[in-house]
Length: 319
Image (cartoon, rainbow, N blue to C red):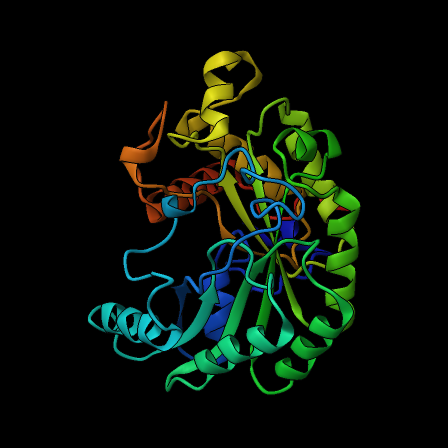
């Protein structure tokens, strides 16, 4: 990257990487390495228990991304302790964030939610919480609670947006539309709370123009972080049956094709958005169809190498 390319662009992460990475952001904020500890607090989902639907999203199989130490039969504090024991053997100076990950982690009464969050925050070494949820499962009293919590701790709310297209959200049985996403992100950001967005690239019926347009639409929202996932067909899901019936509706990328798409997505994405992840990694035995056989750090290395070769960076085409 030369100075001419950087003129007029304010890079919040400096010039040492070509994208705004989460690890750099958290290290700068906390002064040391920060690790998220995944927690399964035993929540369900309105798309499973009948209040909005049953069966859940067509792609969903929660065990495909939960670490082994997560179990809803274990207290939150025990899961945190086991997670710390796992990572403390790898890293010395480290701080932790409690990541309420499995299913919809705001889908309960505020009294019960505050009890679980308080239990996590009372654990020595925990510096904040990250809460994964749906955009249709927050309300004003809950967001006011998070605002007050954020005055004392690091708090991030990660919304499963998955797609900016209503036709896709309907097809994958999300149970909400994109306007729900817009409203939830806006109300959360207005309260000064860090906002994350999850997006799946390759959902059925979407072409590459649709996927790149997600970046343009998300640029209009006050999001702080984005997590990208390639579509993985998980065994036993409704989506696997759909894929077997209509494979022509799906785009399952090779590694090189996906890296090319991610780079073009990053070029459109505004520079201020922190990128947490480029791809997901489910257990190989659960994946139906193409398997890449790569770990996340290997994907990151390939993306960065190709960005260097193209002399490009996040936000290059953002305006």
